Image 1: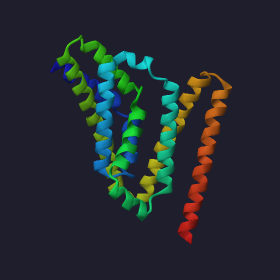
Image 2 (image 1 turned 90 degrees about the horizontal axis):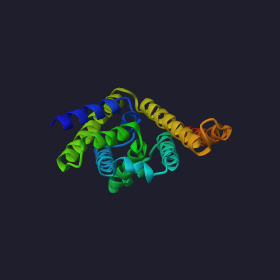
Image 3 (image 1 turned 90 degrees about the vertical axis):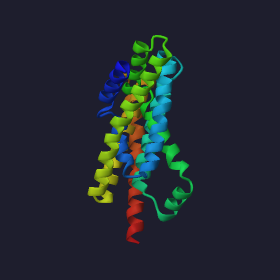
Image 4 (image 1 turned 135 degrees about the horizontal axis):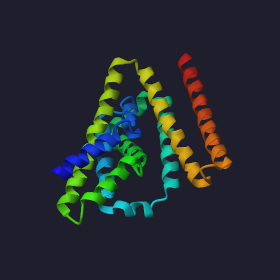
Length: 230
């Protein structure tokens, strides 16, 4: 029980203010609560199984350059989808294919959290407390999972409150900027890993990708406004 409470408290503190907690604020403006809960909780379980079972060896088998790049592009896609909006036909499709949003949320949350400080904290906790004990491993897993869920529920509640108190357009704008900022940050980290931290190519690379993303969003926003006027 001491192991469980220690791990839970550590993970909860590590997750507070983390990007995945803020992403849940953004997701609340785009997706339904059951979809968000299912997708994020599935991702949380898988991530913590990896952290506890694979542990420190996980970093030897994953290329963080690829992970950061995929995460950045995923966040850009969510920002673009939020800006574009959804029409009635798309909402009907979502009702018929409930697993679509769940997989999208799962993928975004999983990639965003993979290799993040919270998962690295979980790996550290596993290395510290497991000690070849199955019960200790279970308590570490349970503590990591509950700590993440409790912290991320706060982000989700904030998103739901904002959704109920603010006009839909305002929350969509907030969601767009949350996704966009984390997308830019992830792309920047990926380019620094690929080209070197102080490389001019890294700066040119992530600026170029950001400009392309901004141009696509600008064109989409203009077309969306034009269609509304018509």
